[in-house]
Length: 248
Image (cartoon, rainbow, N blue to C red; front, side):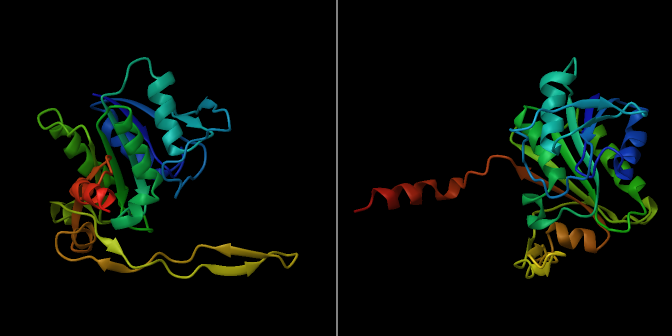
């Protein structure tokens, strides 16, 4: 299978290298990733900066842009044939619940789906980053199933894997997105000239993390696979909203 790999941690990220190693024996891979860490970039595009692509020593390619730029450029201009699948990751850290709104990892996969291709985002749910191989094996298992079970045209898969040896993984669960509490207060500081500056504080704690959520699965030792719709229309509200707007 022809696969485009990207990420948001940058072209030198260990998770990207591990994923490449896991899949390279069975698939035709092209790696195009940002030249720097772009965590939190979400779906941003570099509309006011020209993009440059550079071949690295390991035959990966770096782009001076966002994760979405990398996928868009790879499919639209760089690759001689469209990939059959886009995979983004392995992210160093979880993308659970409403983290996906900000995630460059998820955004790269979403861009692949916007370009008409099936796509998977994968994250190792730990900041320690000891067992990227576990996440890579989970993805390899999912990829193997895709020819017989294609993804719906309006969805991507968001995969989060506990940072444990593969043998310690309890299994894989299909989950829904959980939800966090409101993020903690931003941190105020000053620069050397006494001018105020601000840092983002810690993310909010889990609010909706019960059984069936991605939070719950990962906490209990399971890989979480959440189907995400790229069509954000709230279809259940269309009729009510229409009636409301038509009311006098």
